[in-house]
Length: 461
Image (cartoon, rainbow, N blue to C red):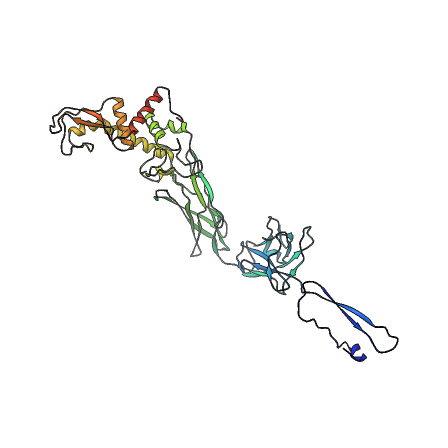
């Protein structure tokens, strides 16, 4: 193009790029010459480049209460407008001037009131527990750092508006322990058994009106493999002042309960208002097995035989240590395979389980010792000749007869059957015979019983 000297000196001439954004720096050389003799032409270079990448900051909340935290997420907006993640190794500098209203906390636990340098993704701002005004806005400045000793890049904050969060006072009830957002934590019933010590904590944030009264409820449920539900509910009362933390130690009332579906519910009464908070499934309460020697000490020899036969794995009330109770396919529970257990205690408390099993075995022994008299009176359920009684039925009297019958009855059914010589004569004589459909439970239990007495205990005894 040709222009006058005056136009050239006035600065009213421009170079305008064509609008195509280059991927890298493009040099543009501009040359000028004149028709005036003896004046050499000259040139200069203009470098055309794309705009800089910048940092976009996103906060997971726009408003928090005193004591709460907000988490930062950093992304890169490229000169093309595309938003992409930074490299995992990228580090950042984060600043805030509001030192009295909280602090910055890095992903690795580092804390500073107003500045975190060379910190990775995962930065949080934690508001102070109290603020002097009803609300305050906290601003932040962030840039991607290239000086931290890693292969990072520099990028400034996008735009002219700083990311910010409002801290506003609002009275609300929070459970501080267990953390409602945390993963479920295992708590073990000891092998004694003793329930674990659980101490939920709560506070009424931002309350300054004096006493706060807390009502607590903890409910634990276990749905067994046979789909039966076993549950327990425990309650308590505590109090605190203002926003102080209140701790409740759960009183198990001398009971043993476990499960993996549980809820902590707390209600706070303060200033004539009611507040509620919940934590769902914070714990998994499971059990530990005692040693077989401790189990045996709680049982008679006959009870030990039944426990040995019923338990699987041998001498296990819980499937493994730190686990749920053993439940068989036919609905038998625990060491003594109670079918069914009478209450939740017999499901989770191994001592209650074997005590009930021993009691049921004793009842079966009593039934064995009186079955003859019941047949003589015509009231025995085992009399296959309904409506007929036999006056001359003898009693089971030997140890072998009685315990084979008791063992068999514990498992279900009978061992012995009275066979009269004349079925139609109630005065007929007869004899006890092994019942053909009895199965082998009574015989096997009697074999173990006698082997142990003779010093030849079975494997795992």
